[in-house]
Image (cartoon, rainbow, N blue to C red; front, side, top):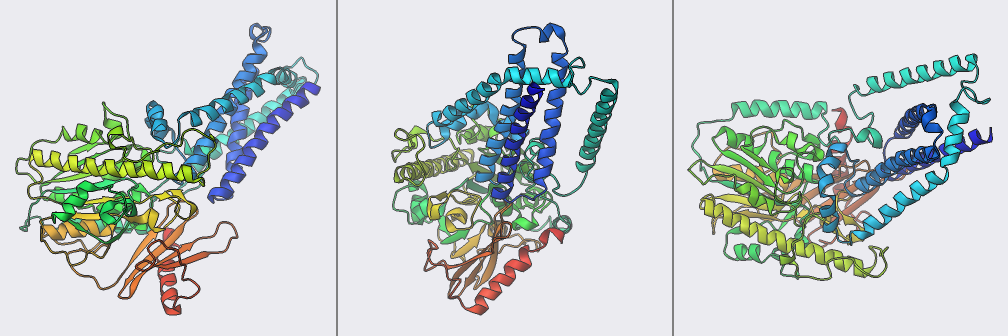
Length: 627
């Protein structure tokens, strides 16, 4: 009896560990309360499946009689717990950095490149390998130490000849088999039924999340988005195909996590963008003084640029700029670093009108986040033969996981090496290394942008081209105590560069303020094409006196924002929706006089202005999923 009790205590400890994690996970990242019982149900089911397999083993006398048998049982339990802990650690980090769980599809894409991924981080790879090795050794040491307890407990609880076994008597056997079968049928029936339900029933559950094709349903269909997409398709079908226009080649170069405030071309005190600065001086680049992304994440930043729609109106079927250009005879080329094939369903959202899709998953020469693969993709683009083309390039140089080449290392130290292995990001040494490494990435992105334009010129596409050089979102480097991106709507995370490549001397009516949704309308207007009425952006060829733009984070703890471009200033209102019963947090900044957002005006702002901004955020985002 004692062996059974000790066995059950070990199993109970593992279940308590899972319960502690999922409760903390739910509270930290704001998932629904339902995620706790759902996760615990799956953990119990997996434990039960493991127990059935182990019972099968201990009933085999040829196995059970061997001296190593208990250690095999302990090792298998260790593997199970290590698998759970791995999911917990990876999903916690993933939610903390990009606000979603990871899937097997994403893991499989990055698995061959884990070594290169760790090397690209701003810390020594051994700071990851070391704790990981310690965790693995610790888990297996514990379960091997308890291997005899587990072995004896399994035998005592499940072997019929043991007096306290669940199968010691015929009555107990029938009762236990009946309970097991009913539980199994109920579990299978529930799983089969629940996985057919629409909506986000399993959203946030780490184990089911492994088998979801996208880390988060970034383009979750709603009646509103479906209606918008249907209207977009009608507009596309009716779009004029025979009107004369300026058939220039078009390109967009988008850098991941590139914030304007770290660029020389936007006044930064380091010469991080000499190439772009030269183009500005030559009049080739027209600089938008203040530009923002619609959100601090890649998927919606990229798609907002293509579709001229904000996040809540995105779907797989929005009308994209290259859809219209494809219908007008353009070739469409998507070439970029990073994983757009598996991550967030971006490849599916891009549509089928691509003459070439080449991302990090396609490269045979470089790792996934190495921007040199862009030129590998460009090798597949033919020389210009008079057929106009639309190019989209995506660079990873400024992303934290982007490969940094020694050629562009200008600022050191760029790694958090030596000293305390648990160096806090609040330590000035760590922040200095992070900033240096990021600035080196900006230098690299600037140089690669120049090389891309040189390659396009060599192939004949640049002579009469128009384009945009921009970012999907920004990056926090300790600003307001935050790091990376995805979580906030401050300027470090949504303030981006927007540089329009055009003829020297060409006049743009509005270079003061723009967002990503303005890029597609501006390009079409520049080509002399009508702007679809379903697009939200405005053309920068025309002056704009005042306007409202909308911004949001995508995670489970959302922040909603509106920026109001007025005659007397640019006002940004941010509403942080509460977690549990926490109060709503409001912030208001005037960005022309306070670009670093150091003074919250919420307590002194004009009531009419504040109420107007509150109303607009509420009308835009409250209940939009039900519309």
